[in-house]
Image (cartoon, rainbow, N blue to C red):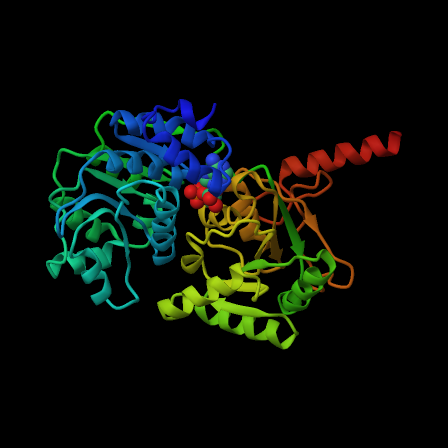
Amino acid sequence: MPFSSLGFSPYLFPLLERALDQAGYAAPTPIQERAIPAILRGQDLLARARTGSGKTAAFALPLLQRFALASSAPPRRVRSLVLVPTRELAAQVGDTFVQLGRHLSPPIKVAAVFGGVSINPQMIDLRWGADIVVATPGRLLDLVDNNALSLADVNTLVLDEADRLLDLGFEDELRRLLALLPPARQTLLFSATFPASIRALANDLLQEPERIDVQAESQPSPDIRQRALEVDPGQRTQLLRHLLLQEGWGRALVFVASRHAAEVVAAKLCKAGIQAEALHGDLSQGRRTRVLQEFKQEQVQVLVATDVASRGIDIMELPVVVNYDLPRSTTDYTHRIGRTGRAGQSGVAISFISAGTAAHFRLIEKRGRLRVPRERIAGFEPMEALAPNPADPAATGGIKGTRPSRKDKLRAAAALEKRDKD
Ligand code: AMP
């Protein structure tokens, strides 16, 4: 189905189409196909959307059309509010609006506001109002408290990565902001997962929403090849270096468990002759933006990041994501590996596992209904014994523990008997 048949105004569509062509969007992604007509009709929306699915353009395009057809926002007023969990995502979603709306006239005013940078330029920017504000909740509240803007005219609210907004503890800010919005509005909620807290939020906020759950949204994209490499913790940096050379990856996004680890691993990689930088929440916003820019421009080969910093990073053609430290949850695993293989491109997601983390990885696999084959790389075989891999039919041991269950023992005995007979 082409973009032209999703219900856009025939008068405006050519202007959006030019921007779509320039962005290289030939056809809508499944979420865009389903969400755009519903949003244009004015319906509320509840969408399960993985990052990388094209969800940003799914809400950006209809909102751009709406504001191109309306008169612009009065001073200090906002028409549409997009709430996101992180600064990077705010900047990125703002950029998508600007990119897709670049040929509209008069221009659509988009403001991205987030913490970690001075509030004054943002206050000045909002003085003349904005059609669309993309914001992290904390900074938005600061701006409201400073009378820099009023939310009384918001007619569309988008909650992007709503599960993450709650995970990061923004619930109170969210409640305060919601109380400032007019009740008559269109609300669009996008979330990668639907825990009870999100279902409750959706019940509170949405009226007869269109529900979209594009198949396999909670599963990683099939274009991502997942690999689990068994290696001792002390060998990971050397193995990473080996893989970068061997596989010829121009760039890799490497995840670690803490800010400290990000610094340490980046320093170790630099020492091993690899252009690496750390990306984490302790860095100033200016530095984070600079590091990301250098990574995008391939001046930095390896970005060593924590989960929070990684949210919303969108780099086209990112060939590989490495879990140097394993993520805490299956949701984080899905988000991390979704940084590669975006928008139909293929990618590789590698997880380093050791004797100490093998059981945790099995739990991630179990909860995500995944099976990732275990591999060893010659010269980097672990010295410490790892529990057998349940993905391997010959392996024993259930998901929960390393000891074979009764069923496993019976199966093994039957296999032995069969082998003896053969
Ligand atoms: P998102 O899920 O919004 O973070 O988008 C993931 C990536 O897909 C971004 O880099 C977008 O630029 C890209 N993208 C979004 N829609 C399309 C499309 N229809 N065709 C090709 N790429 C797209």
